[in-house]
Every structure is written in structure tokens, then in C-alpha cells.
Image (cartoon, rainbow, N blue to C red; front, side, top):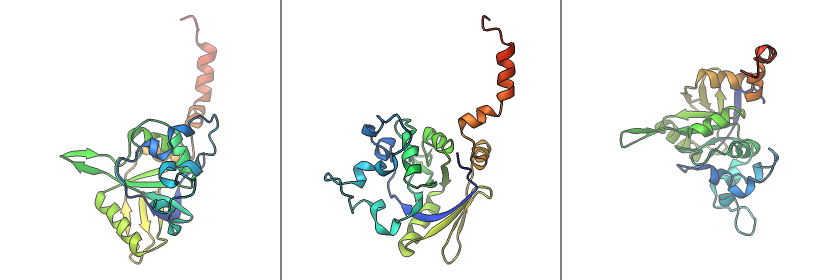
Length: 210
């Protein structure tokens, strides 16, 4: 997969919490045996009207988000089923970074992303960034006043810099293993092949009858 170190792109916002994987890529599109062609069907039920035309009321269809590659949304994004197709659809629709906030509800932390979605994103080269709710609110507010707002997401420095007048910077945390995998551009097969000599040695010496 393509290595991720730094990305600059236009921000699009999806002001919805608990967006599940069925909303990201509905089940009728899971029949394909290919890993390609999912992009146009991302958010299908929200994106299109019954006649097949784009729904102008769906926020991501707004012309100001043309060419966007960074999605800023609300907490618990990618919940529901574990389908990896959801990440494929988002990546093929042009998103390289997804930003969402963690949130505290009744004293309990609700993560920005569902755990399986986060894992699927990392192994497909999509960076997911968890910020605070106040920081994500700031991005939403600034986007309203700055059409075409861009951001630079630097994985090495672990920061998001808004291209606004004040050059606002937000820092984020990431698991070291996830960071290394993204920077190196290694998918699960690549990670396994790093131990190819050990695997070969084991296969040559292992007694299959034990």
C-alpha cells in the first residue's frame, strides 16, 4: 500500500455521530469479488435520491467539497459490522484522512472510531485521527467561515494544521505500531513477509506430524 507521511487536502464535514459501516457502504454492494469500484457507492443511501441522481441535501454532495480528501466527522465513526469494504469505499472515494472526536457520555469515554474500523483503516493506508470534541467543533466552525478550507496532516509530527489565518495546530496520538505501518506503507502481507526467512526456516524444520 502507499506510504503515508504527510497529506494536504480540502476538508469535508459530516456532522453525524455513530455512522455505521452499513451507512458507509450498504450491504448490497458487498457481493463483488473485487476490491475496486466501491468509491461511487460510499454513503449510497444518503448520497443519492431514488431516481439515482445525487441528493443536494446530503452535505458531502455540496459543491464546496469538490476535490476533498480529509473527512471530519463525529464520534463513534465506523461502528456496526466489521466489513473492510467500508474503508475501501472511503479510500476509493478519495479520503486519505478521517478525523473524529472522542466524547464522554455519562462518565464513559466513547472513542472517535470503532476499533475494527480503525484497524481496517490502518492496514489500508487511511489515517484516522482522534481529537477532542472542542477541537473538532473548532474545525466545523472554521469551515463555515472559510470555504475550501484545507489542512495539512503530518503523521511524523502527529499534528493537524489548518490553513486558516492563525494556522491552528492540533496534536494527536497514535499507536506506535500503526504509525510505523502507515509510514512504511506496509499492509498485513508485507508485515508477514518481513519474517519470510523465519517462516521458511520453520517450514523446513517443523515436523508436520507433531
